[in-house]
Image 1 (cartoon, helix red, strand yellow):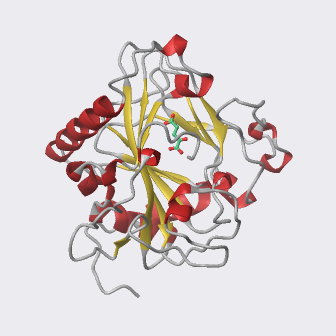
Image 2 (cartoon, rainbow, N blue to C red):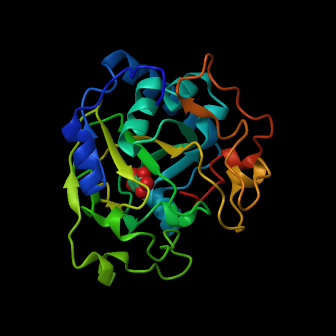
Image 3 (cartoon, rainbow, N blue to C red):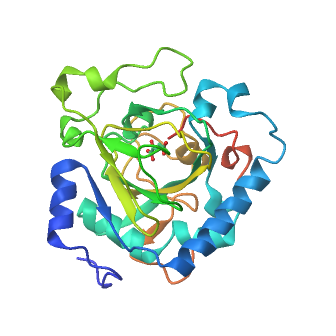
Length: 287
Ligand SMILES: O=C(O)CCC(=O)C(=O)O
């Protein structure tokens, strides 16, 4: 058992809902001051990283039309670092996964521009060589989001079916129609409207998608992905956060790029020095 008490203890029915459905919303996780501080910091970081990109949505690739994706902001922005390592969120992740300790797997801004297309249905964890290690994403909206401006939809219980075929969400090849996978037994995705301050959590194997943004404003979302601290690499295929730490197949995750954030460390983690281009918007399709 961990020795730190949780900053926010989740209600048993929240944990049970996540275990049953593979997604759950937790309201009031961030107050208004925190939200505006973090939203401003993420806005600034996204603006800096995309400053030289003057293309309109229509001029972008199919994948880029789903969102502007900027990854590992915690490594380059000390304010965003506080959000990515937020103890209440990391502790909530540990409670949902029912593990004593979690690491930061990645963070990212997913800004769906006005007119941006839908996000193709997929499972996250099939993209990464860590098998089915306990993994959960916090989807943190900075604005109210509904089906009109890019809400997410989740297939209830789909995390129980295990790793399905990876979906090429970049559309460089025809994406696998995961919603038609026989293992899902025609289960339909459920749309989730969300207010700023809330967090929507989804399990690494929950099938999910997002609606197009038919509004005139950018849909601003930040996500933090947490993985059980004792997860191991199980495949050798390239994966930036594992390769950077020289983690081989069969070895446990470790290193400054994959810091333990629950239990809360004494000080904020110090990011790795070899950030490179992989922390910028060039780092695509590594959901
Ligand atoms: O926000 C989106 O459009 C997609 C998000 C997503 O797929 C995820 O957070 O895993």
